[in-house]
Image 1 (cartoon, rainbow, N blue to C red):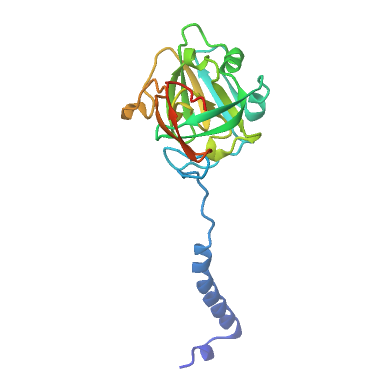
Image 2 (image 1 turned 120 degrees about the vertical axis):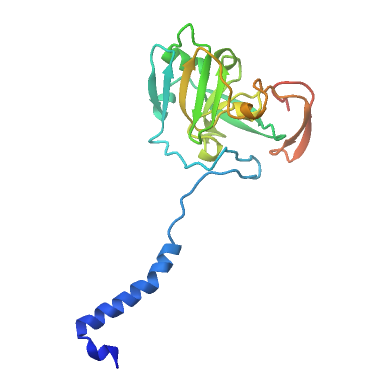
Length: 232
């Protein structure tokens, strides 16, 4: 029996439309846009590292929450942190994986942030929490040393999300796991804690040690001869 003889004109139209949608739906599902995530990548010139894939942060919606043992707990927008006294420096980020790369960074010193929120006398450590659930504890004494920088610029432009934007820490004398990326929260504490990688046996001090370094930006290997920030 011819199925179309049993249908009126409207039924035929509905049937044809149904067939068309059935054919197109799988194609539409396959073409659905995949969410973009930042993940580990050995990118030429400067590797990318996170503890897990992380969604890009919209700088316009980002904020830095500062709380704990301080007089003026508050949240900073990106525009607000950019109003803190700006500093720039060229420094090398050295990873414990034995690679490094140099860049020009722009941002503010921890002291500028401390002056804005006024840590209490009993505050001795700062707890860092990142968008990828990474965390670290660093003493205020270490943060106040020269060359430590909160950076929101890299090589003259906004700090890219894959390298820790909108805001990251830079401690050039320490391995990169102390240079916390994608910071969203800070808390002043009286007591120290164990950071994410240190709970797996990494040095809590993290000072860079002598050894061979793969300088990605120079495409060569260099020898580090003394502890601390590499001088080449």
